[in-house]
Length: 125
Image 1: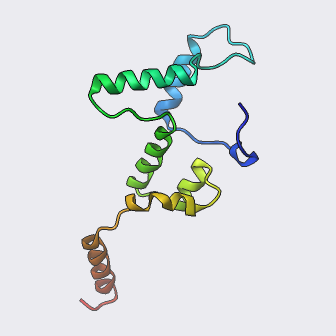
Image 2: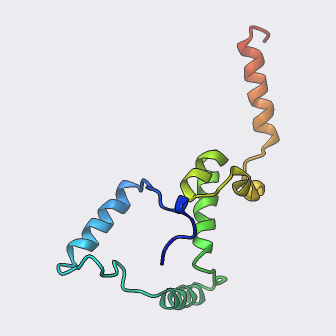
């Protein structure tokens, strides 16, 4: 289906490993037509696979949309800013990304250490 907003049409740079996997996948599909689905799986089938995999792994089932939340969480954990993440996932404002604020690092010891380094860098220690 069409995206919710015009801003949802954007280019996303993906990692090399994913490019390689997609190229391998596409090389096995010789007769793709311009209107063919790239992935012949419906949302309902994907939900069933997620539920089955979660049950087999003994973990809580997640929704397909939760994969987006996992992606945002991973980017936060990797140190990317709310502005960078908002641009990548199409949030209309970084404020939406800050709904994940509880995941942004807030280690008091690291902050104190950074301030110590700053002070030492000023010739005071």
